[in-house]
Amino acid sequence: MSETTSRIRFILNDRPVAIETIAPTATLLDYLRLTRRLTGSKEGCAEGDCGACTVLVGRLAGDDLVYESVNACIRFVGSLNATHVVTVEHLAATDGTLHPVQQAMVDWHGSQCGFCTPGIVMSLYGLWLSKDAPTRTDIEKALQGNLCRCTGYEPIVKAAEAVARLRPDALFDPILKTRTEIRAALSELANAGTIVVGEAGRTLIVPGTVAGLAEVLAQHPQSTIVAGSTDVGLWVTKQMRAIDPVVFIGGLQELQAIREDATGITIGAGVSYSAAFPALSAAVPALAPLIDRIGGEQVRNMGTIGGNIANGSPIGDTPPPLIALGATLTLRSASGTRSLPLEDFFIAYGRQDRAAGEFVESVFVPSLPEGTHFAVYKISKRRDEDISALCGAFRIALNGDGTVTDARIAFGGMAATPKRAATVEAALLGKVWSEDTVTAAQGAFEQDYQPLSDWRATAEYRLLTAKNLLLRFFLETGGDEVQVRRFEGVA
Image (cartoon, one colour):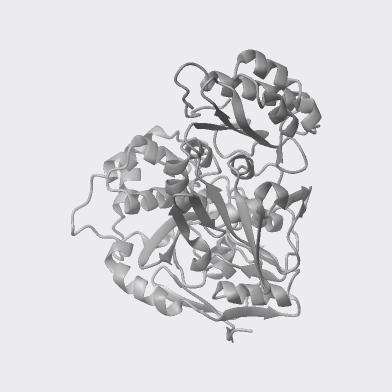
């Protein structure tokens, strides 16, 4: 076992914090409000939807210091080692002068009841730090995870547009002013050993390396691995589940690497949706609008591609397109690594092909061959921040005369696992890519899927929609020049 210590250490606003005793499931929001009496961050939903609890968390990414908006209500304190947590109380100057982001909200009347305002301010502050000239789309994306019931968003957007223009060198800002010092402090807090906090079963463990993670899981194979906690957080806040011992892997930079070459992209299991977005959207443009609809900005900053896969949910958004793209998964344990096609990882509801002590290390997404066409469609009751009723991904290759030479179709929300439509694919192969072919193949969906009815959609709706999405894909890839149109709205 690697060297161990027993303290979680981070910086909270302008003060160092060292914690030797804390519950593995203690949330950052409860710690801020109940222990530190920093009550600007609010609890609205306790599930990462409303954004009233938004804070910034700074972390080292290589030599860079990156600040991201996160939901404090589902972020666990155990995940914070070697980070800088910034709350709304840190923004104003010591003499009470408001930060320009706060002042813009006042000037443009961006607040009424005020409950959601601190979270909105922190989301806009994160945008202000990262973009000098945000577009309206950038602003709306930054606010995607912040719900306001009374003000309306136009004055908030105008405040964001106004403050973006305020960039004089003398401008007061608590992060810009101390960035060098914070970077050095976080570098010192980074720990190559393993942190163990707790006893008598109520234990949290923070490995310092991937090799250390493999050692921990060999000794504690029943542990709950937590990366972004965007799903596990709800197990605690909504279901009151005991998940001890908890192994936090969000600080493992070895799992946050993205490697690209001519064959494809390898994405570490700890890479967040936000971090994966540039590479994936450049390689497969159809993935960009899908990722933009996974939660709000805070969720995308926390949630990971690897976690979405490892969780094995039948309605996870990334497995269907990755299966259709032919992705492969690498699993690791103390005894070594093994790879398998992603589609083979999902065995049954709640069961994945992962042995005791194994964890998802990376996923490889092969490059799309020239002439291959791909699209993915997410169907949900509301456009943003909603779980899929179903998610369908389509990949097809045609030869010179328009005959289908390859077809891969995968759906989430249609079965107990993310699953390919093998019978539909067989009905397309060797046929001319035409409306008659597609119409004939639609009847094969019943052989591939027997979906359930739930509060998101009925079984009949899901089957009909799956058939219609195949027709939609044909219509968007038909004609002399085959082009895949970006999906911009709710289907």
